[in-house]
Amino acid sequence: MKKRRQLGAGLFLLLALALFSTPSRLVSQIKDEVDKVFGTGRHDVDNAVETGRNLIKMTKPMDFEEEHRLGRQVAARIAGNFGIWNDPNWTLYLNLVGRGLVPYSERADIKYRFAILKVDDINAYSAPAGYIFITRGMLKELGSEAELAGVLAHEIAHVAKKHVVKEVQKSNLYKTGASQAIRAATVDVESQQLIEKVNDQIFDLLINKGFSKQDEYDSDQTGTLNAWKMGYNPLGLRNFIATLQSQEKDQSPRMKRLLSTHPAPENRLKELDKFMAQNGLKPENRQDNKERFQAFKAKHPIP
Amino acid sequence: MKKRMVTGLALGVLVSGAWLALAGNEHTPRKDGLLLAAADKAKAPEPAAQEDDFWTTFQRLFSSPEPQYEDRGPQRTEVSGVRGVDQEAKMSEKYNWKAVRQMEQFTVTKQQMFKFLKEGKVGPFFAKKGGGQ
Image (cartoon, rainbow over all chains, first blue to last red; front, top):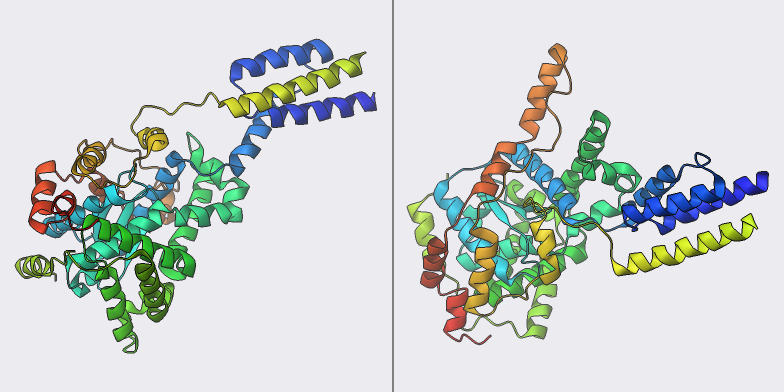
């Protein structure tokens, strides 16, 4: 009797693992076969299969639907925390440069949206699924359209390379159930709390901890390459990082957070210079559009 | 006899499960807008170098309005009572869904983009000039 039970348990485990990708109609056929052997009602194939499917889902990479749900929540959190500067002229300018860059990204199959945060800090953030923010302080600091393009392309690269998504997937919170909560069709209070904890983790990553050095170097390089492909001076992002470096010693509170969440500007410049030299990215024949940017700034002053 | 049947069945299930896993599964993306990008993933384009590629990507991504997504975030009504009201207000400040919807609904027309790129000599207008790509 005991042996038979063990065999049965083993069979259900095998079923659970083997049926994770099996169409439902086949699952019911197989259930019928199991019924013939053990007799109806002597087992719980449904639960075994469901458990197997859930186990597999937890180890699967995050799909776009889940990334989008997460991205919207993180974007709402960023917007709620900092506030949005709804200037129609600057929002349009930002979206023209940002969306113009998208076709040059390696992930040009999702929509990207751009908004300005109502803070004087110098910074930019990207939430999963293409929600990108730049601060008003950053816009004030930038000197040319090529610099703006470089910064936006850097943020697009974070999204394209799924840097946040990869960090989330590494977390125990995600592995132990948050994934299911995010995917669920309806969200109960418990799931809601779990999702909020994941949001807190991402918010903390973006605002306080920052990405790994390698992710930042990667985004610097990809961003510079894509801005260059669009026809901008590849020194755009480099110039901005050099500005950071020159002001690093001043310990300006406006760039304190940016400096604390990114590798030292000196190292970023070193890595970027190496990449540009290796790939032959030169400023010749590329656009700075400094005059256009400065004229726009003069016409639409940033408070 | 039964033991043999069980072993045979288990082996059969394993083989068929593995075959089905390799052949693909039954889950198809819903056509409700949210998953369209996921559905497009299989045919993700190479970075656009030519004018046609640029405008095709632009049209596909930005010319149609985004669907109204459900604001699936922290609920503001899950608590009640005086303390609940405070928490609700706090939560409402913490998550700005209106701003997210504004980002999603913001449109850039093809004409606006065309003028911007042409005047700035970037994008497809840079490639046209033969700037050395």
